[in-house]
Image (cartoon, one colour):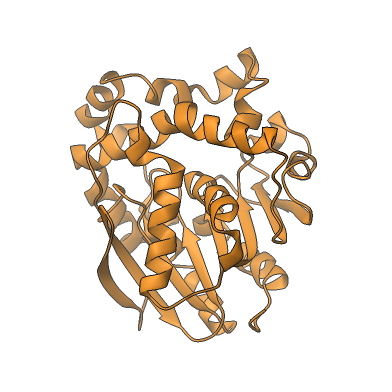
Length: 289
């Protein structure tokens, strides 16, 4: 995986991020979702480099081989604001003052916070399988709670750690034939680390508490993304079942938004990398803004 990429650990405040980066051209920061690592982009990142971009693929704080501070009762150490701050510092350390932003699943929530808190550094933003957490939670009903029950299970104290750590393979059920052997091996190693599992769960606990509060504050203030926004969703997942047109929701959060579905299951970066790459390269300019 990631032939000719630089692989290193970069200290950013109270976290140390494991990161792969390579290429030449406008910079793209790719952020993974749960329970993946930056290796999930191994089929997409080389294609983006071929298209003329520089690509940066970190593990989020506490995920994979990245480290971060211990959890706190208010979950602030795993808030999207804290993780977005990591990413801003990482891109500065790698000499990328301005960059495009792409995120999937939990990584897309970090993207949203990064776009709101550090918008002067961003050119274009692409969010995959995501609507704002507050948009999920404000009208949450029995249908949503039944389909996305894991959000509420992961938010419980202690119990999910005991359940997942008892048999991580059965809980997460990765498939090396779909993920790719190297990506699978890296993912498999990390899900067997209780400290990583705890950090991944803290991500969800922050989501239902401090992250939601931050989004609602932004919404009340009428804040909207100034950067062009691309929204993509997996047609064989359940986001479209819950919200027939995710673009309509994002129009309340961005001035310039477009999007469409991708014929894939949830992990589109692994299952439909060519379709995803084409959508991204059609949207992202290859010349600096």
